[in-house]
Image (cartoon, rainbow, N blue to C red; front, top):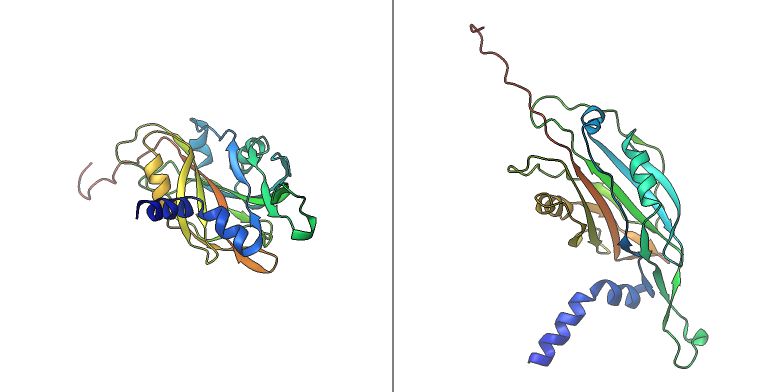
Length: 237
């Protein structure tokens, strides 16, 4: 029983690679290192926003291209600039049996595309939002998952500063998020970011004509909040 339980745990832990290889002989690129934007007082002027990028990762794990799909001025430039320096474990494809060498690897690294999203809360907890309009500027490739519903994180009630969290979301072939982990942490904000990411729904990624498991990377930005005073009560100064 212990051996069976251990084997089950290994299968669940490696579900992304196992299922991807079994379905399409493909495992998506995964984030290894990089930086995220830092929010400061200037973020108050920018307000909130959304960014969606289709990032191309080479077979050595470096970012070689970044194509905007959804933009918000000021935020797009920041995420695009920083994500260009990210490093990934490259995607892998299974080698065809006829191409395998005795004792050689069963997979080989390949170029691939990755979704990088940015969701930045407006700094106003109460009252009107501020900031520039979000624009759709491109159509996503089939190879990446693309959000159908975007859930904005709640601002943690005990937080007092700004924070930025990078979440890796595991998306199944039906477009549901089946797991989320923090890749870059901001203490006090991680739980809120994870809760939001788990509620997203995606158009699933498709490789070779079939829907496959995939990874999406979501930057959640929490600026230092502003609150507007309540309006005066009628009849009082």
